[in-house]
Length: 288
Image (cartoon, rainbow, N blue to C red; front, side, top):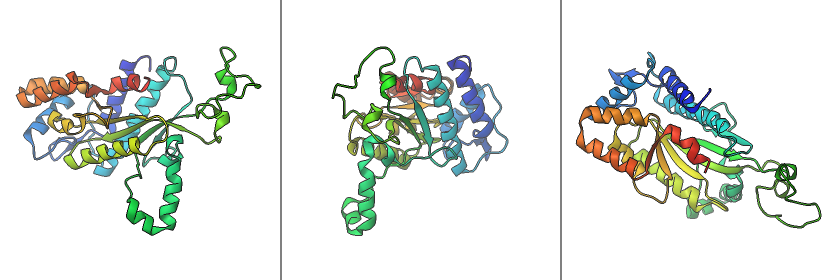
């Protein structure tokens, strides 16, 4: 891709080709029990410049495909922004053929592996601790530590005779070779219902609560067409950094066309309050 606009178009093309489809006479991200949801979903489909799929994937496959195409988009965008956010990155997607890593394999959460072993060997501990610490995000972005040659690439930062910087995980010499630092956790929600939004919030809070070290970026990506439902995940602070819509300008146009004041007011509130952004904003926010 030559630029981010082209990459966003290809992201939408892949979603239209493989995920977005008609089911029971409506787009498969619409709620058949809500006319507003159907109208907004239809409005987004009309504004996307690609035909949608003629064979909708199953519900479970829909979520998996959405995770995979979103991870692909972010990986490509990270390459475009490598001069802004350099590093050796790897993307891990749940329920896919790509490498999958348990949260305990990341530097900030390695201690959870010992906790899992203790729970497995002593069931009575599970009764006390529960399983809230077990977090399984949809997409994880990991950064590998730097060796000393990379650190000294533009000038001498570290010398062999100086006994310093021996604890930081960003220095490869301080950690096992398999160490990966968790940079971001991304929850993908094709649609949003109240129970799903609560699961995402709980996951975010557990990532914050159980870390040792810096907090990774914690975000959600959705294709939900109703702003009032997006609000169940987006409003408030302290857990999720921000929610990103797969097609926010298209959603905004669909909401305006619908002349639904409550949906328009909620959309404006989330955007103005910096709680909802477009998928094209996410790579830049992850580069912070």
